[in-house]
Amino acid sequence: MILPTGDSTQGRGVGSFEVQTSLPLSVVLSKKLVSHRNVGTPFFPHAQDVSGNRAASAGYNLGQSFIWLVHTRLHVMLETVLVRSQTVVASNRTDWTNSLFLSPGIRWSHNFNKGLQIVPGISVPIGVGPSAGEKAVFLSRSFEHPFRKLPKK
Image (cartoon, rainbow, N blue to C red; front, side, top):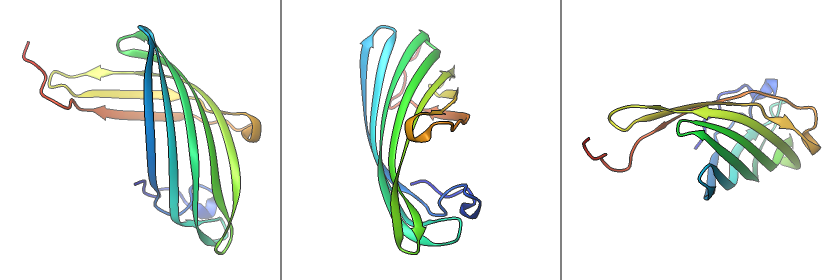
């Protein structure tokens, strides 16, 4: 579940919480190269446009990334994301839109004794095709905890 944090009347978000399911698949291609794929389906039960019109909206997203393991704690990434989604155009009415981005980036990790790993990252999504000309900066941070206790050293 994703909570709305933007102002939909200013074009920053859709004014609704989102329920999303995703199916990931990772493949180790070599000792230094990993591929990730992701298929997802978002659903916004009360999406809103800039005029305040509301409608339920859905869509799907496809992601493909290649991760170059420069160092055990430093990765260079290239991700491609295609999103096909419904946007609100009138009360209880939506239209389909497409977006396509190439996103080069890096991430690095900070490892802690108890097993916690904090992974900040930065990427620069660049719009291509239907999203040509769009640019952004994406900052991320994840907190990774081990599934089981680590053996004592």
